[in-house]
Length: 242
Image 1 (cartoon, helix red, strand yellow):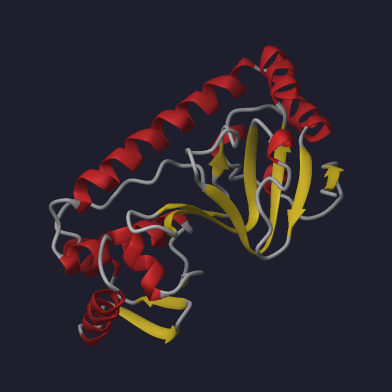
Image 2: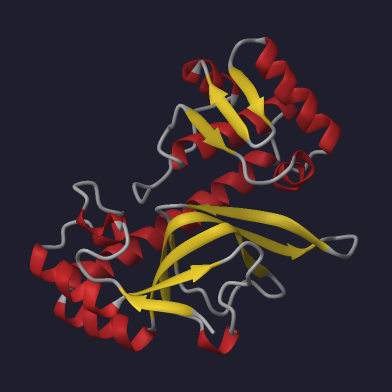
């Protein structure tokens, strides 16, 4: 059974009242946000839980508040391979149906704000800006995914790894220490490289003083300008929804 609760003012920590709101809620008034808080649900997932648990009960739109989600797709040689990661602050829509044959899974404990199609349509009817925000996010995400796949076809191994790290760093809000929730082999699946190649390129970045590898899942970006330069082009632009 899903752990769902309505998000109300004063309940569990939530970015809705923060000055820098997620892009899905940008431009909404205080009255608008009270409508959102009364309609969206909080859904808590444990490590390894499928998102959603019941495919027939998939929300129309979701905002990841905490944790990380991974999307896996069938690999060319059988089995599944990592296709994408979703970080806190990012929006997913629609969650169902997902890409054919793909699965979405929580990494560690994850919290989502979710809304079904009927509830979202009702909200958007009263708050037109909400639908505009969602459409803008979808357009940005499609353009970004196309850009990522296109760039991978013409980048060197170093440029691919640097691009991936710069992209993740920007999406996480450029923290002092970036979180990598998956291993080198899975990062290789995203970049079209082997585990050994990913590890070798990350060690090269560390030797150059661009990053520091304090833990397997933690990367400190010491030279953001140098990292961007090593991507081989202008850094990937992450839409402002994180």
